[in-house]
Image 1 (cartoon, rainbow, N blue to C red):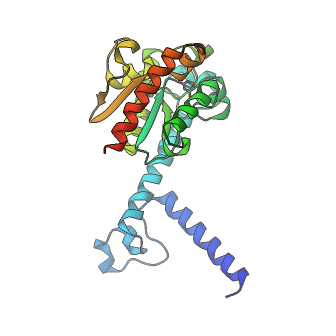
Image 2 (cartoon, rainbow, N blue to C red):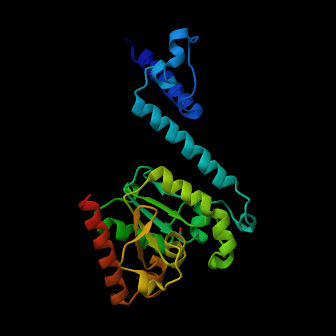
Image 3 (tube, protein in one colour):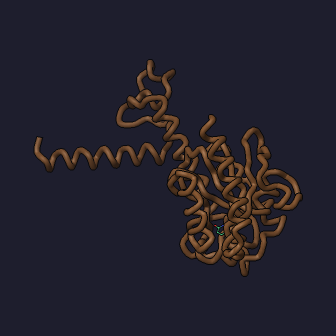
Length: 244
Ligand code: URA
């Protein structure tokens, strides 16, 4: 087969796969249904393994969720945003980080934790032995509050279905709650961070480690004790991941 022909075939295949991805698993492609096909799962009809079929379903779910977040107008924060910041990373991550809300840099780039606090978070993740792309990073609230103020309870409530859906899709082995807003939301508590940090709580059946927000570390750059505490918390997270 000539190189040109191979490239053409690969391009066709790529388009076809994109098409499957857009439509999800419940579809027929390229031929009429035969009666015997009726009972077969749609993916099988086009020769997809069950696993691939479920991956396509997940991809479609993610696509819908991200689109809903980007178009969301459930609370007044949409008025001041450049763009919503859904989250990023490995959708099958065992480890998930949940922060408060996007800041200025995140609002401009549409990505979570890319400012100074984000750079520190990346260092923490790497010190834990992971790459940023191995984990999933998101926030409780997906749009930037004015002047980076703390999100209000009504904003947290309006945005909460998105985080709940993300957690459900990822089903991580452990979640790190970065700061008070995330810890309060996931653990349904109003205890102080000093009381909460260092101890696993539970969100449904998922262990949650509350720890200080990286922005707090940035604000207290010279304070080695806070750094030490965060590192102690992260070591517990790594230990739990290693043991399961
Ligand atoms: N602070 C957060 O809580 N989230 C971000 O994405 C950035 C800063």
